[in-house]
Length: 173
Image (tube, rainbow, N blue to C red; front, side):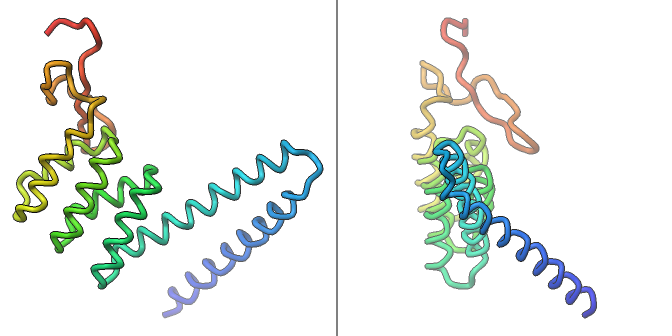
């Protein structure tokens, strides 16, 4: 119990410091220098975007199917690395609609690092998810070879992920 209290107090201190920094940033939006105002606006946008992503990732754990489904689509709209990781984890959701939405969303994002996790869904128990997984690689044009072979030139893109890259133009087969 003491550990939980200490953790909550530490979290409160971090939140308080962050809020103070955000206040200073927001005040700088009135700076006479337009370059400063632009930099501050970008910094605030990044901070708010990270907060949004964290909230969406948290919503993937909701008991409510619709909340999880909305989180999948929201993460797809963000499309950053954290969102991609969360969407890949949603491929293992127990509800087929969530898995299918995650497959569809990842396919639309065209992130090469997601191709292998998408291909793993070809073995999903759900026909809906398998159909989405079949269509998903069609959105990955940038990693397809000119002859349509999607499995040439494997390249590692991080722990446990292999990405298929098309050979360079003019490369011999």
